Structure formats: C-alpha cells, structure tokens
Amino acid sequence: MEMTVVEKQKTIQVLNPISQKGLDYLGEDYQVSEDAQGAEGILVRSYNMHQFPLPENLKAIARAGAGVNNIPIEECTSKGIPVFNTPGANANAVKELVLTTLIASSRQLFDGIEWAKTLSPNNGPIPKQVESGKKQFVGKEIRGKTLGVIGLGAIGAKVANDALELGMNVVGFDPFVSVDMAWELSRSVRRVYDIETLYQDADYITLHVPLNDKTRTMLNKDAFQFMKSDVHILNFSRGELVHNSDLKEALEMENIGKYITDFPNEDVLTMKNAIPIPHLGASSQESEENCAIMATQQLKDYIETGSVKNSVNFPDVTLSPFRHMRITAFHNNVPNMLSQLTQIVSKFGINISEMMNRNKENVAYSVIDFESSVDSSIQEQIESEMMKVNGMISVRILG
Ligand SMILES: NC(=O)c1ccc[n+]([C@@H]2O[C@H](COP(=O)([O-])OP(=O)(O)OC[C@H]3O[C@@H](n4cnc5c(N)ncnc54)[C@H](O)[C@@H]3O)[C@@H](O)[C@H]2O)c1
Ligand SMILES: O=C(O)[C@H](O)COP(=O)(O)O
Image (cartoon, rainbow, N blue to C red; front, side, top):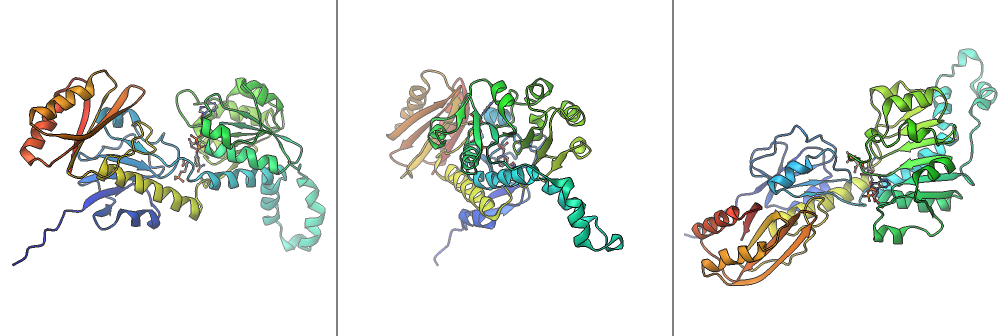
C-alpha cells in the first residue's frame, strides 16, 4: 500500500488583519492563526509588540507597512530574528492623504463641514444660512505657497514632487537621504541642510521621518519658535515626533496655525486647531494589498530559503534555491567567522557547494550550501558546534 506523507503545515501568526491577497501567497504549506502556538512567522501592522512574548519557534517577523517602532528590534536581533518591512508599498496612499488634507485644511474644509452639519431648518432655509455663514471659512490656496518636507524617503519624495505639480514651492530636509530617493526627487525641490531654514520658509510643514530616539519630539518649542505663526503642520509619521505640551501651548498661543495628524491621542483631541485623523494614511485597498503581498513574500522566502529582503536588522541577501541542504548563521560582525563555520562543516566530511557572508553594521549573516544531505543527528551536531562559536546568535539548517 502506498503511503502519503503529509508535511506539517507551518504556522504564521497574524497580529492585525492582513489583506487576503497577501495571505494567499503563503499557499497550502502554511496555516494562518491568531494564536502564537507553534508560530514560525508573524505578520503584523501596528500592533504594539513591545510587551509581547515572542513565540519560542519564531523565525521572522514581517511588518506589512513602513514603521517598525511597534516591534522590539533589539530583542529580535539578539535572538537572531529578522524583522522585515515593506518600504514604499503604502507610500502612494499616504501621499494622497497628505495632499488631500493639506488642501482641505488650507481651505478650512474640516471646520466648514462641521459647521454645515449643525445647521437646522428651524433657523431658516439652509441655502440662505449657507450663503450668509460661508464667510467664516475663507481659506488659502496652496499654489505659490511653500511646503517644507522633513524626510525625503518613499513618502516624503512623492509628496514633494506632487506638491510641485500643484504649484507649490518645496523645501526638503533629509541629511540621510538614500541615493535611490535622491534620484526620485525632482530637481526643483530646494534641499536645505539646516532644518531651521525649512521652519522659517515654510507655510506648511509635513513630517515623513521614522520614529526613533533621535527624532522623538523633534517638533518642540525650540522648533516652533522658528516657524511662521500661521503654519500648518501635517504629521502622518508618528505622534511621538511632536512634543505634546509644547504643541498644545503653541496652538493655544496661535504661534502655529493648525496641526493635522494621523495619530490623535487624548491630548491632541482637546487641542485648539488640531485636526485628528484616525490613522488612515495606509488604509487604502491598494496599499493594504501591496503591503500584505510584499510582507508575505519576504517572510515566506526567508523561512524557506534564508533569503533576506527589506529587513531592518539583517543584511540583504538574495539566495537562489538550494539543492540539498543550507545552513544560515546570524552572528556578530567579527573577523574569521566564515572560516570557523567551514571548519566545522569539513570536520564532518561534507562538501560545500556555495557560501557567502554579508554584514550590516555590527551583525552579519553567513550562508553555506552542502553538496549532499546529511542525517538529522549530524545536523544537530553541526548546529550545536556552530552555536558554540564566539559571537554566534542563531543557526538554521534548511533542507
Ligand atoms: N500614516 C500612515 O499610515 C503611515 C504610513 C506609512 C509610513 N508612515 C510613517 O512614515 C514614516 C516614513 O515612511 P517612509 O515610507 O517614507 O520611510 P522611508 O524610510 O522611505 O523614509 C524616511 C526618510 O526619513 C529620513 N530621515 C531619518 N531621520 C531623519 C531626520 N532626523 N531628519 C530628516 N530626515 C530623516 C530618512 O533618511 C529617509 O529618507 C514611517 O517610518 C512611518 O512612521 C505612516
Ligand atoms: O508605518 C506604517 O506603515 C503606517 O503607520 C501604517 O500602519 P497600519 O498598517 O497600521 O495602517
């Protein structure tokens, strides 16, 4: 009688709703669960993972989106777990909302709509009330005004380029801009190298930087003092980039005009001239699908082949499929690692067909392909010897 061997499905834990189009990429070898039990991968959006116990078998985390401040990156690195994100996959969605709200706030649309909803026929014909009340909401056109873009990455570059198309002058600040993004950026964007110039010149300021220890509360009273008193600030990046009480004071004192944010909190909701949006930047069907597909592919590829693409804590490594067995080792970026690993492999009389090593800051990733398969007891011995090498963080045997 012929026996069918049913391979155990791998489990991917989802911590936020992920577009089905992305999950479909996993295929039948995977099951998706909200439960951590046996999870080898995690798919996440904005779920705060800082107090989250990482599953014991976890191999990788993929963030379907850009910001990774909700993920404990240092802990993941120390455990040899790569964290992926999906650069650019939601940039168009955010750009469209930034430009929409830039114009809408400038034209006093939000206040106007709120007012229109309060009108009652008890006070006379609505069209008459509209015509007499509309003078309260005279706004400003954005054409000819100056937009300051802080952070010229995937979103910032798109916002800057399209604002030019709308007739704005654009000033950009990003000391760390990547070569690829610099190419994307229109030459008509005036790059400045001190942020104060941007603050002074801008009628509108939009923030497109990641949240980290250097950018936290970067918009505070020291920054506000340079800005025009009617400036509109748009924050579609993260709430913590702005100092709450300084912001409140600046809005109260009318030292800044409006604050439009995708990240309302208890304080922002009570602030004068703050326009709260419920984190809708990436919430378009297209963006959710793009992010989910990219995240799922990267996660699956890493689990199955060890390839690394768009990881924030591992070096990028594109690997072709292996024929027999592959060892991947994640370790400190110290000399002589690859030769120590190959010595271990040769001790077991195994021929190596390919090997490589890449580093990223103080960590590195080594990959060794075997010319033949070895049984599980040898695999265990190799893994255990490699784990003893000084500076080793994690070892995986694939195949
Ligand atoms: N509202 C939303 O739904 C939404 C969606 C996507 C991203 N985001 C947020 O927007 C951020 C940016 O996203 P992205 O896709 O453009 O990322 P990105 O990595 O492509 O771009 C970020 C840019 O900021 C620059 N930068 C870093 N520190 C800086 C500093 N101190 N001053 C000036 N520039 C600095 C980097 O050099 C980079 O060019 C994300 O980190 C995330 O927090 C929000
Ligand atoms: O950083 C991001 O990509 C955004 O903030 C989107 O977050 P979301 O996936 O929870 O909408």
